[in-house]
Length: 329
Image (cartoon, rainbow, N blue to C red; front, side, top):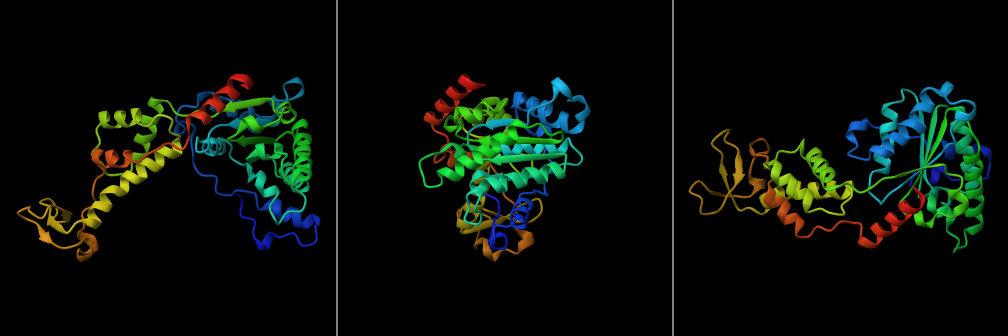
């Protein structure tokens, strides 16, 4: 969620309050993600290039019958890379205002009327063109089983009104990890859909390779291929966490070590067994900061982590996502 705090609290339900909240959704640090940084996902990348980048950079090409509807639905499991691939858009547009928030922000305790806040976001996006509005958890607008039902319906109606319009220089990206909860009323007004799929085995290998680039390690090409095969049903986010846990494994071993020895190369200390002829009984806290050898991550570290590793997506969720894709994509 966006950071809506006491400073943003609506006190008198004024237009200025909603303006201030909408302004808080603008993301200034857009990152430096390039298209080639996004592993696989060729079709979603093409959809974003065609339906977001091109119309924002060359609006004169999209007039009359070629004018673009604003709504693009990106759906995929949590951690599959919906936000990451959206970030690549901004590396291809020199000047763009990026609004990012969750539907939950429309129903926070700081907001009295989510539909009015949504309207203000769109108004600001129109004033600050070219603009992209990225809305997470859009399926929440279609839930009907709680006391906020009226507000949800009003906000969904406001979003549909926005999607029905065509404003040069404004694009709306809707993100969901539970697309099967979207109702037909909303789906009917979303003309383009992009499935952010789980990485294939080849994709998982590439993601792990990318994560290991800046980490001192001893893994071979075959080791990394083996990891790709052992991480089925993993999201990119899962794989980042896997590498991070493996990266900390040698540090845990170092912290538990009671003996160290000096290496022959630069005289720095590294953990060793107590029966090593060069072993010195000490802990890592006894070693000066500049004299401790940075340990490498090994395949054995990954094997240890994999014993407890489980992907965050279960088979039922994969089935639901696949069924939606087959029905609506």
